[in-house]
Length: 538
Ligand code: SGN
Ligand code: CA
Image 1: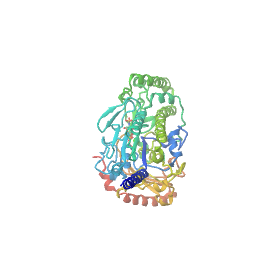
Image 2 (image 1 turned 45 degrees about the horizontal axis):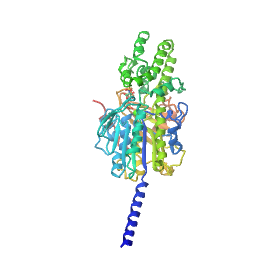
Image 3 (image 1 turned 180 degrees about the vertical axis):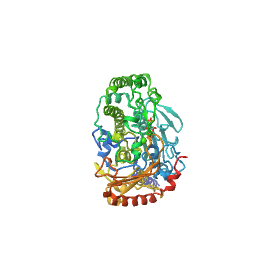
Image 4 (image 1 turned 90 degrees about the vertical axis):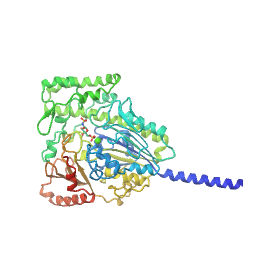
């Protein structure tokens, strides 16, 4: 009898161990995404602006994608594409304004059903109840940099501190105290930084204020050889970046300077002007408590003094340069905090041993202009906002330190994660799993071009609606609303995209070929003129 019991016991133990082993084969996924993080501001891509040693660790230990892009370069739509694995015209979240239909399937729901523990901390941008997520604290809408409010499942809360540190503290607290050790995890760690109005922590504000950054070649672009859309967009540093909320000139000083220079206002593309409200500065600054304000004041006073003394003496070129430096100081300071905090999380994964079976992804919801073409913001299919940073590490699966040049998109994430977790992807998802690329089987990858479609117009920054096709060599774009204009860029010979060669006879064959391919892509992804029209505002 005792012998029999012993055998049963051993068999049970063996069964449990094998089940656990089976469970453990499923990898954990840590999805890190920041908001508006340009690849130009990650040293794994380009070290001229900033050194990001921690984010770079992910590339060093994994794969860096140099041609990763989004399907629609704007915040909430990009997130909807990521969650659904479907283009904007299919998931319906075409712009920041449209409502996200949360009755549709998102990939975290499939993970939860398959036995994963799921969590989300930081900026989602839509929905206060993300589906399929066990634990979450998310920022309402855009959220705040200083002492931010969070929406939770059971409670809303305001947490004292700097948003990037706070989101990290929440994520680490979840790892240390709430993680179910018997389940694999899918964790979203989503930064608000470096979103406008680029408000750094007091320490980084002081550290970056005195730094000088190299200007991009196209800072003084006059948009000749481009179409109407580039000329009428309202995202130029000199004419559209705001003095108070963006350059952080105190409202009192801005008011004084208006007597000296009545033109320091915000210009619209139609030649009219409006005066930005001082609230855009005050609402942000006044979130700080007295102790925090004291630290911010030291730098804010220097900025205002500098502006008051030197601005009137500057010529137009110098003014652009002044605005560029102020922009970079704050934008990059917020990124430096992201990098430090990503380092804290990577350190925890290593120390806990979790790193061994965890896929870590670093990306952004889109790229961003850091003065290229004289711009800030995103929206356009032109490279700096169309492309997005992407690096993935997965020990024993991805060869460390590899670079991949394939045309991959945020559309592909859902199917990639599902395949990694051995969960069947719904047939109507529109991306491709990146697993063959990650495992070094590039011959199993046959995508040559990607489809892009941007809608939010007329709206802030006034980037006209357009769709297009991009492959490694060319980019063909159709601005179809308000105007009917086509643009073609030779990506190899004109990487800065300064010359629209659509009407150049030397490119006639390319135009014919790409126009046909674009038509086919629109059919493949089920986009159409009827849909374009249905998405127009009334
Ligand atoms: C705000 C910003 C814009 C930005 C949009 C969308 N203005 O309106 O510059 O393009 O958000 O950004 S601000 O004065 O309020 O900062 S997105 O990342 O959410 O798409
Ligand atoms: Ca964004």
